[in-house]
Structures are given as structure tokens and as C-alpha cells.
Image (cartoon, rainbow, N blue to C red; front, top):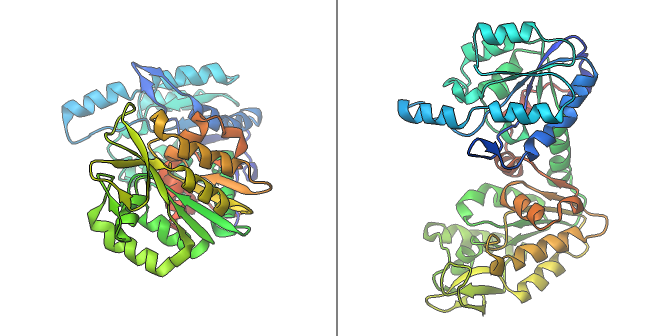
Length: 398
């Protein structure tokens, strides 16, 4: 069922809370990457042009409410002021930053809003009740507005006051960012054009068990690379040297291999190193034949070819997790080549599920060559696990 979008709401002259994802990286109080602010602009600009009175809410970083000293340090470090300053530079309207999350200063700023103007509230995590979806807090925030728009895809897997609690109490809709995420992930995972190939990488099997489970039910082939592949090699009885191993997941990997057979595609060779460092000595080792004292840090040339062949003719590809330690140049080749192979598939829907693979694709210059790169690592992972996302479930259907 299609969810309501911001275009289904009559926003003119109305106070609209928009839950955005402004959880941007900060260094010494300066924003080092404003991608998330840019990603929210289509919804914000639509609301400005249509005369809404806009109240923006977001979390920023983590705040430890148990320890008073840590709480104070967290609040100081994760103040939204630099975000407000950057936002004011990229929108063509008045932006008022309110350095509190409740009280007269906030209420007066909201009451003073004219059509098309913005109030940005202080970091929602300044409130202890935010992550607990405290009903009193949610009711208070909801009382400030007439409507709610969900546009923080990176937070929709969390049932917090600002993502779910407020939405339950107001007429609501998805913003353009969340709408695109749900449409693209849905198209790829739930109604894929076949052949459908999933590529799962990253360090740990335990992080991706539910993803592998769900995708084995849906995909024609599941390619497994990255650090997690060595637990599967161990399950096949191979030697993996000092490669990453989750000993407590070997039995589970065996079960997957027995159950899925050739539906799972594993590396056949690996770039191995004698230490975890950019200047390590390297050699290419066959899978299951990694010598003692050596560790696999990337997929090898034969595997790149095998994965490329597996991808040939695919009409839907979902990729989550790098093929190796892509942060170090000697071990970035596998991730780079897989990225390139996916991006060159003719007429395919290609989706990257956020997190490290999104960072890798952007870093390697492939951003424009994919159908969709998700903005939410955790949220897209949970979507791929087949879980209901509370921040989406709460939004009404058209």
C-alpha cells in the first residue's frame, strides 16, 4: 500500500514538524560533510514554496543520560548550532535556531513563524525521553504543530518520540527522501525484476544473519564477500590462517551452505597479507588454503571474475557491505571492481543499502551510476531483513 506523501497534505499556513536526519559528522564544531542536509532539501524547499511554517527536528550524535559528566560533554559536542548555520546558507528563507527542546523560548519562536519560514529545534536527544518514545514528550512536541512529515530515513527503524510518538498524534505523511527510499528498496527487495542478485559483504556474519536469511528466500543468487566470507570458508573445512573468524557462527554458515547450495556464491581466491596494514606483504591465496600467519583482506582476481559473471544479465542487484578492507588502497580493488561491475549492468535496478558500501561507492566516484544509494545504513539493513520499520508503519496510507 502506498504511503501518504507530503504532496497529499494541505500545508499552506500550517505548522509542520519535519523529522529530518541532520546527524552530520562534526569535527571541532564544524560540519565535515553536509550530504544529509542536502538530502533533506527537496522536502524542505517544497514546504517553503507551498507556504508551510516549518519546524525541523533531528538528533545529532549520542548523549549518555546516565552519567552527568558524559551527558554535559555530549550536549556540548552535539549542539545543533553549526547545523542551523549551514542550513541557513542553503535555503532561501529565514532560519531560527532554538537552542532548547521545550519551553517558552521554543513556543514563542514557533508562534512567530511566518509562511515559508523555518525553526530548527535543538538536538532531540537532549531529551532523555526521546529514545524511549516518552508519551508526555511526544504529546508536547505534537502540540506545537498541525502536521508531521517523516523524512529521516536513517532513523525510521527506531521507535523514538520524534520518529513515531509525534507521528501518531498528528496528520502525517512521508517526505520525498523517505518516499524514494521505500519505493526503491521495495522495488528491489519485495518485487524484484529477475534475475535478482544480492551481494552481502562486511566484517561479521552475526550482523547480517537476518539479511542473509531473508535474501536467500528472495534472490536468485547471494554473493558473499568481505570478512564474513572466511567464516563460510572455515565451515567448508578450509584453512583461513589468521583471517577474521566468528567461531560461534561456523555451524550456522554450514547450515546455510547445505540449505542454499549453489545459490550462495563465495570467493575462490583472496588477497592475503602478513599483517593488518597498508604496507603489509601480500600474496593471492586460493580460498581454504590461506597459510598460517596470513589473513585475507580482499577478494582475489579470479573471484572478481566469478562475481562479475554471476552478475551478468541481472535485472535487480542489492549490495550491502564491502568486499575487503577498502579503506586501505591495496585491499580496495575487490570493492572497486564489484562496484564497477554493478554500475555497468544494462537496464538493471541497482540499490546500495547504505553504510560502508554507500561510502565506498561515493568515495570511488560511482554515486551517479546506481539507481539508488540508501541514506540509512541501519534502516536499509532492517528493511532487507524483512522487518517492519516503525517510523514508516506509523505513516498513514493514501
